[in-house]
Length: 245
Image 1 (cartoon, rainbow, N blue to C red):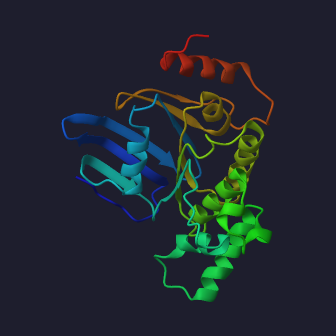
Image 2: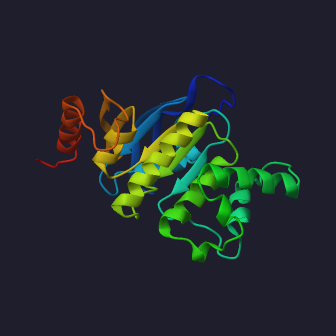
């Protein structure tokens, strides 16, 4: 059973004791995840562990599950692939994130332009998606997710296809926007270093179950910095994933 509470509760989104099946395959097993308002939670796990399914349930894209889903407002979702419409300009791609609102064309354009300015792409509003670099396309995807000012942002490995320097730039941009707007974030990633660098809390999903979770001692240290506590978090998370260092 799903219950959706569209009100401020101090929790941007959560799943409580959620089970989901695909045919005879038990994909999620008693999964509970809570993302506080203004908090970043990372979900790590091997391929096929059910990470993306958790996002789909929390986003409301998958309803045939048991358990409880609680969200504040309408969540926004960004994927590893930007999924931009090639026949729309950058501005109208971003404006697509406002389709559920009754806004004039001028209002949509103004809000899209502001979102593009927030991600540093104000000068590319009239460009076509195929003219963008990978990092620019991902910025547009992030602007489209955030243009409706969601209280919960769901990220499905959004930086996994980017080169190392662009990934660091996107980390910095995400944190700038998060600090400015204070939305809750659930970040699905296969990168333990990324999880420790960005999150307040990291959960490990294995075969559809949350098997481990830890609060990051020193969240969001400056790029290039580390701490003994966070090094220990990385080692413990890798161990939980079956990687020995």
